[in-house]
Image (cartoon, rainbow, N blue to C red; front, side):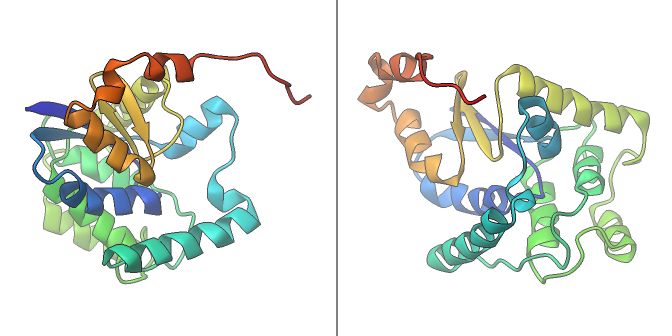
Length: 212
């Protein structure tokens, strides 16, 4: 059985769709998943990028795209009342639900559904309080250790070269985005392409024009 690390932030509709699609796309593969919540904004800040929702034409297409993808794949999806929202309460609640700050699929699913089903405000205090009561975290989500765990997860993702969510990591290789799931499946099944030189060759830097 091979281990996958699923790096995500609840703010991302693509991370939600990838979470929902993962069992279907990888059906028949032998794997286990470690769920790693990170602060997407921290990755963006490190690499000097804007989020998709911060560029208005990109935001508009992103939500059209994710809703098309949702209906195409039969996944329930409703845009939250406010987006982008501050994902910190959801991320910290996820980490607080296990002794080792590694949430299981049930917890992650509850939080994704909270954000992306029903069209409510993902961080409304009354909704957050009800969710926390239902999940019964073993730690206080506001505890310093939980906050530090989120920073540690985010720093580790940056150190590994991750720049976006969702990202799946398999044997040190990173697969970014919902549309990388078929590629991930091929890697899990021992696809011949991954034994050749193409992975390293095509990932190597090349000379090119630089924007000033």
